[in-house]
Image (cartoon, rainbow, N blue to C red):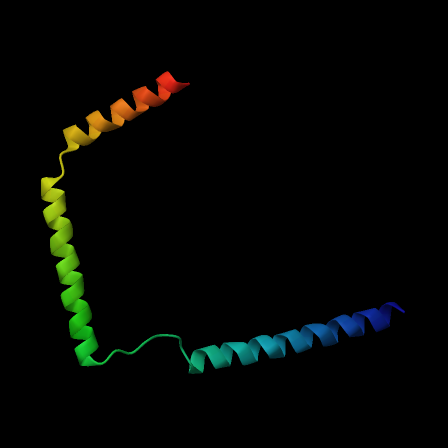
Length: 82
């Protein structure tokens, strides 16, 4: 009886190894990535540069002291509400 269970487990493991090997070969042959044409790449680069410049502009205008003051006020208000 134990031999039958052991053979069954070996067969199941063998089938699983074959399935995993097939999945591995399939994933390796068809990698999931997107290839963009030059026009799309250029548009994406322009968009990223635009967003980067916007963010840098906002960071230059960001006042840490004002932010800390606002945060402290909101914390104080929350504590008072408790």
